[in-house]
Image 1 (cartoon, rainbow, N blue to C red):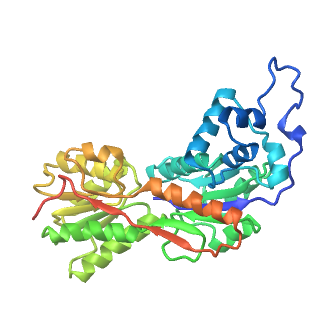
Image 2: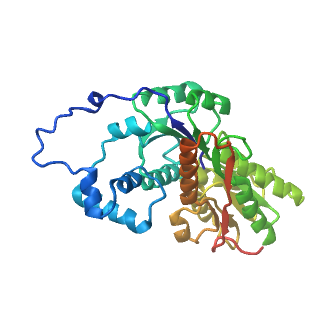
Image 3: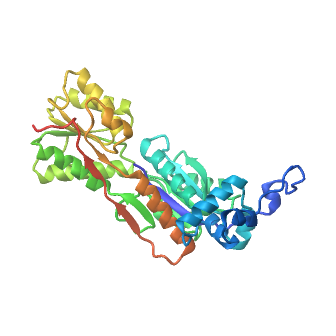
Length: 362
């Protein structure tokens, strides 16, 4: 439930070897392995070893595995400073994120890291206290001592404008994750509106007409998109779309919001919840107030966290493929690094409705 932006190669001066610490190897008891040692062990050319280290794809799977095995066996460590002088790339990406304590942004960071490492990149991570322009500028300045090939911004909330982010990148290629659907920026998103339409239409198909809603915090793009989709589907079917309460993504927030809905006195037979963690709290509140799920109230969540299948009852929810999101965003970023002329665009991934036991026909 989060937004991510990836910026590319920083136009900062290349650090001299002294910036990386002592260069003397006198304290080492054994000679360090060289790229030629790796090539000999793997029975390939030094050029093939270089291609594997630098993440190039034009290497056979068998050769790549032999090289990776030889690197591990010889404990070979590439000289990144020397590499950057030759390739003008550091093989380092920086991730600037907000809300990493929440499930969505945390999963985005984890999957970006997994894909980056698979492509031979290391990451620098910076957490934001807000997404205002000055805070993002400070985060950029904190990594200005490193030569980076790209920046990943996971900023799924209102704050600095897209123009501000582009200006802060100073011409470096960038990709954003989980921004607003339809923006003409280098970005990768999951269609939140489509996901919530699926969830709401599922409840209506089951015969529910009185459907309440618990949103996430409404300064988040994902929460805005889900609320808007719920309202549109309800209104298109001629149903009341006023019974909604704002939550905070947490189980405690979902519990409080569900109690508020119950105390309002307005009847509802189904509840659409902005994420699975809030749905967990809502389930507890409903049980506490003597409501059975799904006999009295059907409940649907969003995200499909690993625990959702083990809620009581197992939760019907919308699955976001965070693995694909990480893979697509890093792939896009690398293409912009290697081919700066790549036209900026938005890649859109589709969510999937997962039906379990927390919903039933009215």
